[in-house]
Image (tube, rainbow, N blue to C red):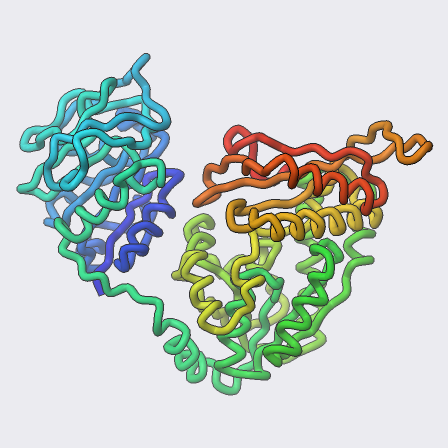
Length: 510
């Protein structure tokens, strides 16, 4: 199988680059620039290397660099943004500060042709994000693209198979980004598109039938995509020797606990233990308003509940986790040191006595996990469920968490989802939910004065959740949602719609 190495220099889009490469049916893996040597790169037989972007200047002595011997490996290299500047710097070029000519966002790219920009029109849109630029290209390179503000936004040295682009081809805002990546991967690196997901589930089931034979495996099941796919995969491999613990902390969406239990226990006959821990979590959260403190309390309580259940079960050989590739990358370490549930609560309990850890999905991205889930028969609602925060509704309730506010969050969220589904907006918005604010205001219902909470609606459209725009919801849909919530949800007398994109805001409020 052909492989592309994505060498991470701190860029915010490093995962996106790897995902784009994999979408071309070529396997890509990400390594931190200081975690792999040139010798290891050679031994791993990578067909190509991509230098990612990064926030630094190549002249900053503290910025990430790599030894020049990587240029002598004979492996094609594509530098992106900072990676482009680093490639030029390592090859003898000159980098300068753009001062007043910095470029951010959509920019008009003028193509002069060449290997990497082959097939692009003379003018197209690219996505820029840089302050420094290549003032003088290295000897042996030629400029193949420019903008009004930047004399070199694409360069190449075909003899050494070194290429660079100042913009970001991996983001959807760059019109011909996939064409550029395709040119590098297939025309330069000569990769074969043989990274297929079709047999992953089958081969994994056979693998764990052998590896986990006669062993008891414990999995923290949240009902989220990752842990759900692991549950189905291991259930097919070892049956009742898989024990799934579902900790219901009372902060799930309306009827979600019952739904998860029904799907896994009744439909798939998974060995599932549901723990009703609502009272315990609410008691621990009483009086707490700070969002970070909420998260820590929820994480700590989850660990304690999980430990208690594991000890009740006894004789557990292996812990399984829904760790996926982004978790491995973001942790910067072996992700097995983290219990991967819907909390992402760090800190594996050392006194439970697991003899091993199994992470069937650790090399996969979210969209690849979803594909496996569908193949295993995961219901559409679970396979395509929206991202749900680890602490659950706790981060969608501003201020102290009470039973009254939880009910408001659950009921209002259910109405929002129902109306979005009716209007077909579930196919447009990538995430949508309600937020119970801590603001109360005067209202009137019937002839009576009310003093209720203000509820915020949030819906965003995005490809990768790194950036997001607020979803343009028709006024009549917003009106219907507002009317239903104020009439059906006790305690709400005012509804607002959050029209802030990311950045400057985040998707969630806390």
